Figure 1 (cartoon, rainbow, N blue to C red):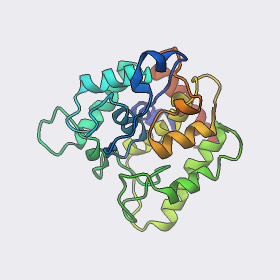
Figure 2: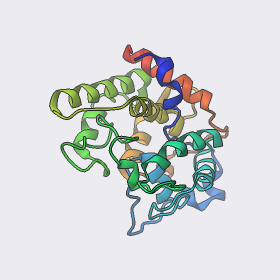
Figure 3: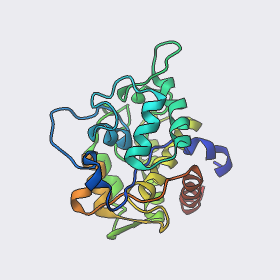
Figure 4: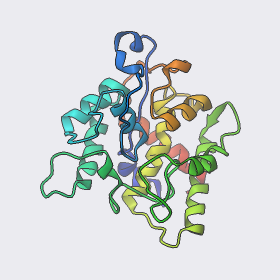
Length: 244
């Protein structure tokens, strides 16, 4: 698939990042154990809900709520939130919906897709929760303390190959394919500074497995607002590394 055909679609993926003093002025960057865990298939939005930037029950999220949460929690420009919301609201089965729920993001045929880096294909199991077996395959490509563009691209293509080989109902859409590249790009925008093209493995492992910001192991939020152009850059680099 040509990069130009999915460029706008890949911008719909969520990202998250932090700057050094943010945790001290915003307690939501820290974690307090609670019974509820956000119920959706998206690691970034679940993290926002688990830290209180979005409703912890994941219900009735508006465009303004999403934009504020992504800016306050992850330092992501409102333009990315608008793109994401325009697709996320389509997962709400109600006619003329103006909100979405985190769990409706798993609705088949819109954003939910096979070959996730951390979720099961729908054919095998519920695609909403984190899946340890799937993540083990993904993480097997992260062989160094700092994860590289090439490693993430290889992991993504391996998950795609596994899904095609083992899932008799494997399918994806152009939108979902673009979204999956954005998910990969978010590693470098969420847990790194968006400039180096590498990210600490320990930050990614903590974030994906716990759906929490890894402040307790040294992660800090970047000072600059993430723009769509940055997502474009990392998506291009990942696709080039994957040879597509």
